[in-house]
Length: 126
Image (cartoon, rainbow, N blue to C red):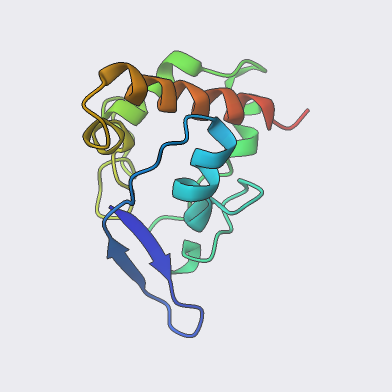
């Protein structure tokens, strides 16, 4: 599942996620996350206003965790665990299984998630 925002109306059209061959984090973020979290990852993507819960400012994760990026916690959340309300709700898809369906190679799915986490760690506010 992926989201497509309509600028004139405040609604989100849910469409199936298009498969990707990319495994680098920035490409994955732009393709799958920026529509909600924004190109700058601060939560202001084109679909943000139509969501029930405002997307998280992903540049503040380390600040909210005593200056350390919680990679394992985020990896668990991407896979569908962790109890984050927005993950797996109608608003935010659980990306781990979606990435897993794009390839029969489990390693490639995990490479995508780790690439995304590496990218998020690099964009943390200082």
